[in-house]
Image (cartoon, rainbow, N blue to C red; front, side, top):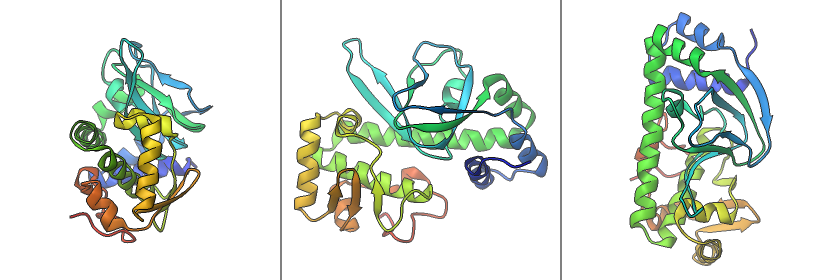
Length: 251
C-alpha cells in the first residue's frame, strides 16, 4: 500500500532507533491515518483537553507552547516534517500544553487508542517512539538553558544553528540556507525577548558577518563563528550519522 513520503521518512527514522521487524513496519503502515490540512495558527490540541489523536507532520511546521495566567506565551519547541507532534500527550489523560500550527500544514492523525495498541503489541516500535520522545526532551532542556543562561545574541545564534541542522536533516534546507519558519514575534516568544530586540539582534548578526537575510530567508555565512557566538553543540539533537557534512561538526 502506498503511504505518504513523510510517513516513510519517520519509519526510516524509527529503524535507526530500534531493530524493527517486518511485522513492526507493517503495523506502522497499517495505522488508521486520517489526513487533514490545517491553516497557520490552528490548534491541534489545547492545554486541559483530553488527547484524541496523535499527529504526524507531513508538511509545514508546528510548535508547542504554554500561556501564563497573564496571557504571556512561551514557545517550547518547533516541529518539522516527518515528526510526531504529540506523543507526550498521547500517553497522558489530559494535555498539559498547547500544540499549534506554525504554518499551513498537512498532518496524518492517528487515534490515541490505536497508537497505544501499537506500542503494547510491538515493543520495539514503542522503544523507537520512546527514544524520539527522549530527544524531544533533550531539545526542551537545551531551550531552557538558552532562555535562562545565554545573552540575547547567543540565544538567537543558538536557535539559528539548531534550525540549520534540523532543517537539513529533514531535507528542507541545504548549503546553510533555509527559510526561517517563524516571525520575529514568534522568535521573541521562543527566546524570552521582545520582537524589537529580535530585530536588533538579527541586524547585529548580519553586521558581524555571520548571516545574511532576505525577509525570512537566512544564509549562514560563517558557521564556526555563529556556533561560537551561540555556544552551540549539536549533541542534544542526536542527529543520525552526526551533523550534516555541509556544516562543520559540533565541538
